[in-house]
Length: 296
Image (tube, rainbow, N blue to C red; front, top):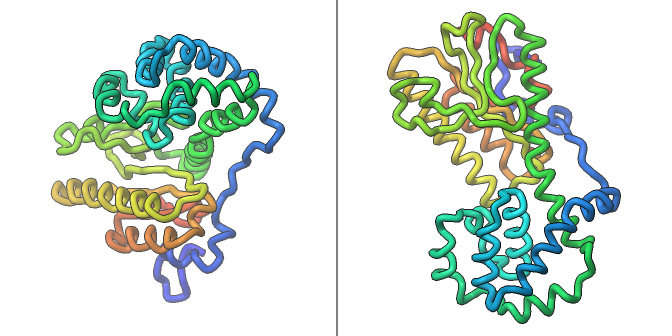
């Protein structure tokens, strides 16, 4: 399916009519199979939360005590429990910022659920609490499908293009910062997922982002595609001004592509820089990425 009958290279939009055949479904975990392991993993978290709860005269004090827990992993799990019991409107990403503890208490502490109500609610639940353990388990597996996607892409790319080099974290790990790609890049902290070079790494051929969309839609969908458009404009404007041939690859996969306007939105991003951007799924890699395009 590389070319249409007119000789034109296929766009991402051309794959939409049978898009379900071009996405990859990453395996998940079944309920209630995960409960035994989840309860074993999170029982110490729930026990510690109960201990801190009993020694806190207020919900603000409970939050401060949790913020002082030295283990990062334990502190984050406790904050997730805190959010469910005490302040469901505040995201964990905000709560976990230790330097903002005082600000959060001042700004949001008055809206925390009263500690007496939290204690009463906590006492109604068994230890281990299967429901809470299952909720926490959802956080544990979050991101794994994205890691699986990048790992598979790296393997697939090396299989088809053994004479090119691909760099970046294959699973978990630090993103590549554009400031480490180009010494004078105006937004040095712009993160990207992979970079493709010629075999001697003398020439940067492409910059890439990889995401697995499980169930994107609504505002999240707009944020994702808007962020991609901004990223592409920034990178390609920089490279074009310097007469560089660097391309941008957006590797996206998963059933979320079939929801809402996601497929059309990605197709429009590709259309803006049709000779410099490719949006594709894993199954499209051998069909759409060519050495000729990368080096053109």
